[in-house]
Length: 424
Image: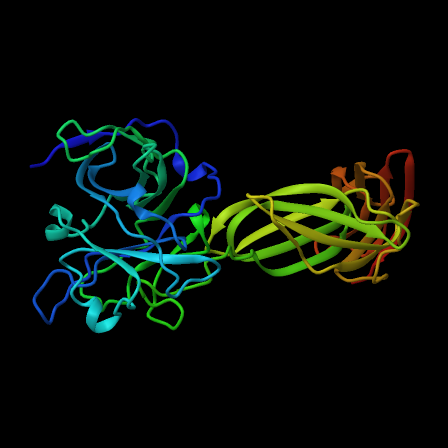
């Protein structure tokens, strides 16, 4: 029997911020074909991580699938039981494994350790298995409060409006009242990250990190990422943001800071701190983080009011739960520009091009124009707003005759001219 359930679309879930929690779906596998046995599946499971001693009879799993982004079918509801043991525990967290009739290959390839709580499904999920996407979903729900503890929506297109809540079941599949909110504590696994048919049982989808902040990734079969229900894939503590570079450079408007992250989990953002040889660390700005990301992210910030002399900078990376860590400290010397200057072009004489350098100590409109000896304008090299700093421009005279030319700088109340000689 197939029954459609409608989700109320409230907002795009990808941009929502969840709160930390102690129980979450940590890994699952579905639709892995056992080609040798002629079976369509063979290593299905859902692994839940919770604190050691947790009474799992307070929780249930809801399974749904979608035929399009607006209509979904609930095809399974399973009440959990048992307690989280200390077997293979990590940072005080242990494992709970839900299996189906299509989990027969686990005993051969990745057996679940003795002592880990295992619950074989007995309803239609047990016989039919976990449905493949697109638009598949698993919801871990608190039976006492009807609150969604953690939901995983897998194989969702990035342009799909994610549903925000699921209605109650009028046909009696569900045994607790809804609706079940998906506004918070929900992970999204897009189309480009999915389990594949005809794969050996090392292609589960696993969470890196913890709670709803975890970064989902597909296993590669390598050590540390192979699907291992009831075993540690990664530390169950939050992973730090992986900062791969942090640099500073002097630019025309001040000091520019650039940094790059390779991965991010639970990243609220970065406070930028500065100190000098005579002052202590001071927060000068804040840059938002990407939250969770498994791809490199580039950040930049320009300090437009650095102190002359040596400046020191560091980043204070802050998690959504308030935890923080500091980057390494970088040092750079800043010499404040105090005068307008128009330098002699180089080379001079030249053929056919030369460079003209100038310095302006404050931002403003700037003009740099080349004239002939009759006062006729030949070319305008600069005409617009410029930040304070050093500038260099190339003048190419390949279409001009040999002779003496004048170049003139106008900036604020400053004006200066110089001569240059073209020899062909």
